[in-house]
Image: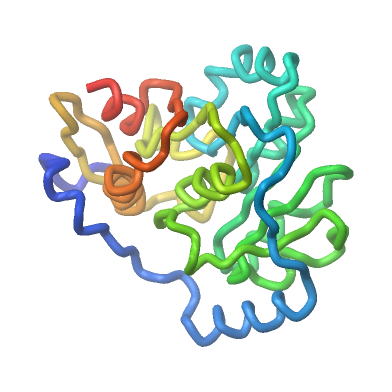
Length: 244
């Protein structure tokens, strides 16, 4: 339910909203130490990375299944974040990459059971259980402090894929808004149920957004100018921002 009506001024986007960490810094430092000792760091410059379809978890993802399937049919690699791997598999598409950022132990559900041939790109701050039972030849950590991304996994996945060599990134489900009956993801994610929301006006159109969604839009405004070749699909807040 909306708490307040706000005007979103892109001119103020230089000050990125920082959300309250879900895991304390001491625990995150411990995760980093464990993961770095046991797993290999991500190396950049991969082959065949000219074009990638990145599946974010927003509600509009389901509206673009045919477009994503067409990209996949012509050989475009599929990169997923969190639970969108399962969404891709339900649509008979095998994910090439899965990116996970969060440090909570509950994120282990995103990588289990492991998918054969999928390459896991996991933040060094992830809970060690996220790495458990994954193939060491297809699992890599990246430093969540060094990637010039934002506060969400999609905002980190974009610069990771760019650094790996992707020239064109088609981004689906990158909505940053709540739709319909409080739908915040394209799949059930009870951790985000019941979060406080606000109506936010972006260039003449209103969107219902949680606090982390507002932070995501502000982060995107700061970062987007350095992201050539990124196309955001749908009618969510970020796609509207780019169109207007």
